[in-house]
Structure formats: structure tokens, C-alpha cells
Amino acid sequence: QVQLVESGGGLVQAGDSLRLSCAASGRTVNSQTMGWFRQAPGKEREFVATITWWGGSPYYADSVKGRFTISRDNAVSTMYLQMNSLKPEDTGVYYCAARTDGGAADWSRPSRYGLWGQGTQVTVSS
Image 1: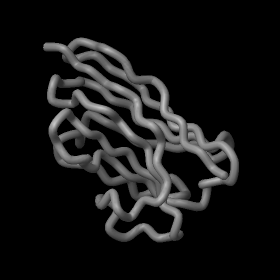
Image 2: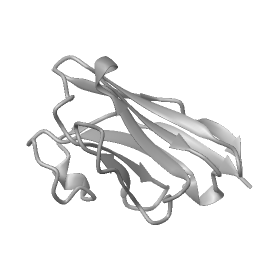
Image 3: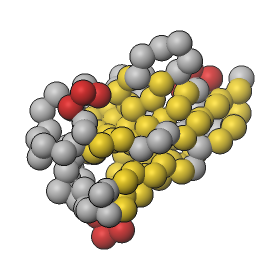
């Protein structure tokens, strides 16, 4: 059974950078669209970024566009999220997710992703 494991979270100051990683073990997700979501305390899980299986067509939430970059390396079954110019409102638990249906539509909806990691905490202080 495939598992997704996030890493790279931490406590940083506003303006700093972090790089999150999401490693897939077990059955490969290399042929699936993957994405990053985040959830702040008391809020619903929200879309951050998505990337197709071949690493193309990245899409971002407006709130992170120009500051975050999503990428993946299928050779090592790992997806990344480079986060620059972090803001306090970026604070939350960041989850990586993979589609399990081979699709790419509705990429911003959490319900479209069938596989999730356990999350990694990102805290940005002002």
C-alpha cells in the first residue's frame, strides 16, 4: 500500500523560506496528479498547488502565486513545495495528496484526492 510522508515543516519568521517534501512509498503515484493543501486552526482545508504526473501544468492558489513553486521528481517518487516570502497567514498544517483516479479535473477540490499524507506543521511568525 502506498503512503505519502511529508517533511520540511517548521517555525520560521515572515519573509523566510521553507521547502516541503512529500515522499511516496509503496505503489507508485508517478502516474497521478498530486497536490498540496493546507489547513489553519479552525478553518477548512484549502488548496495550495497542484501538478500533473509529468510535472507540467502547475496551478496555484491566488494567495501563494508568485511565492510558492510546486515540483516533482518521479525518479525518486517525491513532490516538493518551495515556499518563499512566507507570511503569517501561511501558517497551518500542510498536506500532500495524490489522485487515485488518473484524473486531473477539479484539481482544487480535496475530495478529488484519494491518498493523503499525515501533514507537516508550518508556522510563520511576524
